[in-house]
Each structure stands twice: as C-alpha cells, then as structure tokens.
Image (cartoon, rainbow, N blue to C red; front, side, top):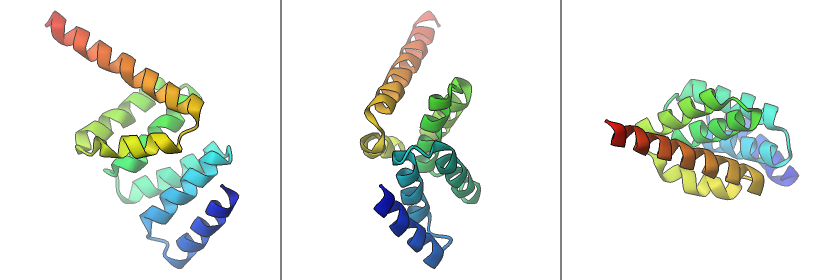
Length: 121
C-alpha cells in the first residue's frame, strides 16, 4: 500500500483532475489505516463529480465504519440511483475482510427491510 500510495500521489501531481489517481490514492490510504485522509480525498473528488458511484460506495463504507449508518445509507442510495452498482463488486475486493463483512451485512439487512416493507404494502 505505501508504494501504491506514492505512485498515486505522483500521478495526482501530474494531473490534479485525474479522478482514477485520486481513487487509487484513497484506496491506498484506506489500506494503510488512514481512513480520515481517505475520506477527505474522496469527499474532494466527489465535490468535482457528485454522481460517481465508485467514490460514493467508498465513502459509504467509511461512514459505516465510523458508525454513521444514516449517512452510509444515503450514500448507498445515491449509488443505486446512479444505476452503476457494478462498481460494488470490484470495490469489495479492496475492502478489508472486517469491512467487507460490515458492508455485506448492512446491505443484506437493508434489502430485507425493503422487501418486508413492500410485502406489507
């Protein structure tokens, strides 16, 4: 992760508008346990393009990790509204095991809640 972080930082310096390099940098920060810095970088990236599903999904995980379930839910709903949920599977490979389980459990329970509310209707 430190080498990837250094490379991503160099790429960001070469092209400050390169979103992929910013995401790579944020992923490396996350892997190194620097979630707050990753969150700041992803928030900055999101401010430039508010509908980027890969950025929204990463921010959702970081919010869930902090215990901000409502914020995490809102970000996941935004991912769904973009119509680009295909970003979730590759991102799950980046997440640490405990975080992957957190995201899977959270999404599972939210899906069950939606199904139960639809059955009641």
